[in-house]
Amino acid sequence: MDFFDRTGKMAIGSRLRMLTDKITNDAAEIYRQYDIDIKPKWFPVLYALSEGEGKTITGVAKEIGQTHPSVSTIVKEMMMAGLIDESPVKTDKRRTTIVLSPRGRTVCASLNEVCEDMAVVVEEISKATRNDLWRAIIEWEEQLSRKSIVERVKEARQEREKKDVVIVPFEPCHKDAFRSLNEQWIKQHWQLEPHDVECLDHPQESIIDKGGFIFVALYRGEAVGVCALCRMDNPAYDYELAKLAVNPDVRGKGIGYLLCKAVVDKAKSLGAKSLFLESNTLLKPAIHTYKKLGFRELAEYHPSYARGDIQMELFF
Image (cartoon, rainbow, N blue to C red; front, side, top):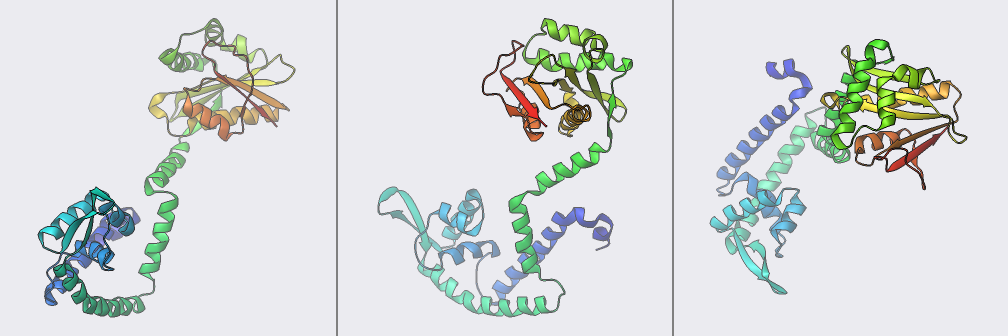
């Protein structure tokens, strides 16, 4: 167990697999001691069919929480062992149900003593331990039904990598990054428009000198994302959130959200009452980020860009 002392909880899968293998091997030996010729993996299917009524493979798979292919393989093995019979559904001859064969019912009856003795052993082990393994398994299953380990690890990774992200104000040295990052996503689907060229070629004059701001995301010192807060001459909106772009190589780290939040926070600090943005619904991650920050789609809008097919607003 020194290995698991060193790896810690990140090796939980390997440790559970070892415990499962040990219990499964013991179960196979127990069946041999009781002269019951079955494999441990057959037990859930045997139990599901023990009530006597015919069931479909799909129904059994759903009942015991296993995949259809897995149960289908087990059923074929049990048929070859003479434990299961197959019969057509009376109302639909194309479908079949499975039931225990006479031999299967005999084997199932002989399992009663095994189950009785196993219940004693499991209870004995539970009393000898400080933690209730059965309850812990239920709690883990409940937690993982809400959010998988994959999703949780993804979130943990994002939180860790966020520590390497710094949002800084635009400096002249960021001019090339501001242009290249925006060109990259625009040219992927569309063409640069005159207003794009003006902003990207002259960010200082067209955005900052007019009362706007540009934020740059540095990931481990490299400029990987940008977003602008542009002053608007509009009675309904104070500022526009624009020119959001993130290097594809570092997407999935929450950088777009951090940039947009920096823009929103800056607008608030300036006393702004409203924000506007224009985008395209093809940019699903960006739209998701805007909605997450509270932006709502305008019911009626008039695009300023040929690529624009959605406009959104945020009021403070």
